Image (cartoon, helix red, strand yellow):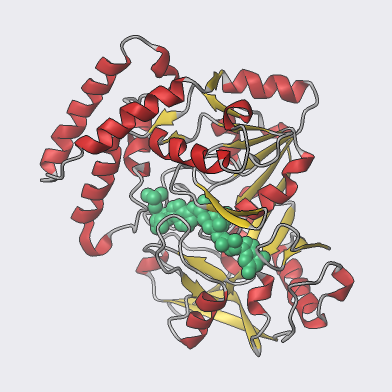
Length: 420
Ligand code: GDP
Ligand code: IMO
Ligand code: MG
């Protein structure tokens, strides 16, 4: 069967850490969507590692790691990341498999991403500029190059054809930056990619499931960045929700058993777009400082605010969340009072539903205030030892969300997690 770990907010909930924690219980860890816009942080032997393309199960030699067909892959970033992981004595080529349907990110996709964002000006998405949008546009526009194409003799001519198309678009944007060095790196990395295990992903994974193997699907980004259900147009270009597991890996919905939804005990967002509970004050600054809220991919400061239960409940609904994991609980250790958004007021009307276009509406968050626990929780191992006020905070979340918090993460370390 297949279990899923995915983000319920606007990304960076700590998915990498949680996947790394659960990976020993699985035979396969698979990424099903997104690309190097993801930055998943793990601590291995006390050292920080940020993974962008490689699934977060790679440090467990017993698990196979699959880059699924729904992913967009930048060979250059993959090559760099392999070196980092190999530095820990891991044989990446042995444990990493890549679906032949995985779409390639070309250097011109990155250039197009940059050109498009520059043209948007004030209204820019705040993309990570990794070429994600343009790569998915070529996929749905039926122009893309896929990993399986690398094995064709005419790959280079296919590349040149697409590159010419991109050049016309770049000319329209008046984009003049020289990207020839990006192309040199790309072709070097393509050679490395050819030496990886390229698999017929959908048969591979379904055969494994039929043999009784356990699969963990690792989401990137999060529900509120989903192309269909997120805060469009301030979203990423893939289906980040549990439905994306089926299209991204080629597995049927009834194979999915548990859906673990990850949320911080507060909320962050990086890039543009609406964020109802954002705190542009000292409290927001305090959350950023204690939580070290700076992007793992771009280093940008993350916008911080209180937990938004309206958006979280929506995310639980569209994902079919069975278990909630609350991360960064320790970040709230020193707050006198905590606030939880329980409804929005829009044009004088109170609602518990996420509206179509948040950014275009005069939206006020309404809060429930709860007492903070004011205790250091970072070394707690047993649920019974968690402060009473944290238990109350969690009980309120359980009641509101209708999905239970089953784990609390109380620090970035591998062992800092409490099972409830
Ligand atoms: P991801 O994209 O969802 O994998 O999350 P990121 O790696 O982008 O950001 C999460 C950050 O929070 C990383 O720096 C983690 O090391 C850190 N982190 C994860 N869980 C916890 C936690 O429970 N407490 C604290 N203080 N940090 C955490
Ligand atoms: P992980 O997996 C946080 C945001 C970008 C931007 C928008 C579109 O680490 O949680 P894109 O590069 O996809 O064109 O950017 O989505 N974004 C993320 N924010 N965490 C991520 O991934 C993100 N991936 C993309 O900041 O607002
Ligand atoms: Mg991240």
